[in-house]
Image 1 (cartoon, rainbow, N blue to C red):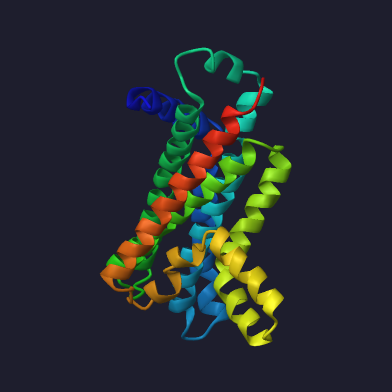
Image 2 (tube, rainbow, N blue to C red):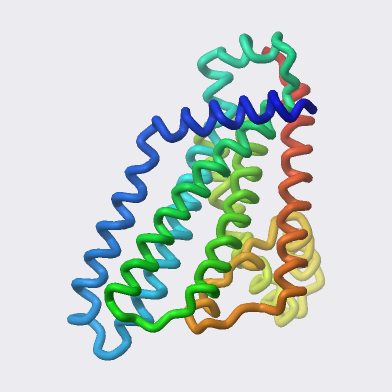
Length: 257
């Protein structure tokens, strides 16, 4: 792979996604934050600070997932539908470089979006004089970015061999199952049914365990996993991204245009 070509593809992809009015997501986030600050004290008595902490982190995660899935599934499909892939492929650009570059470009967009939303969120917490741990919240957002990078790789993998609509539905399915796989595994063990247990174990092994990157519930209390656990989870995410992009590149290399 040529790093310069990957960087050029990533830069072009970054600018293309930014031009698609993706920054409107930030405006929506700011409006919801403002409404939450205004309404929560009237709805909840004494617990509005904790609820606002949860709302901010939950909304950031949800909006990030929406962007990762909807934009990620269309990254390669759009090139195929517009036939621009016929222009890119004959040039000295490998299909693997195109996949990796597109992934990095969208990761860059989401890094900018999540960073701005996090800054707005921390600013709102400070303005509202709500007690919070800046370090814990920032670390949780860093791991949210890692989760979104995995989700983008999932969306690209589905997007290279099926339609955008089906790829979107499949990616949403992986997103939901990825956050519930550990719970499903425990429920299967309680059922004491060997077939159900084998099925859930297979799902657990194949589907990325996105809950490993979910630090929201503890970060609001200023609690984080140990540094060794954080490191293992980070390596887990990177390995999954590499595997998914490898699969995407392999499938894309077999497609005929």
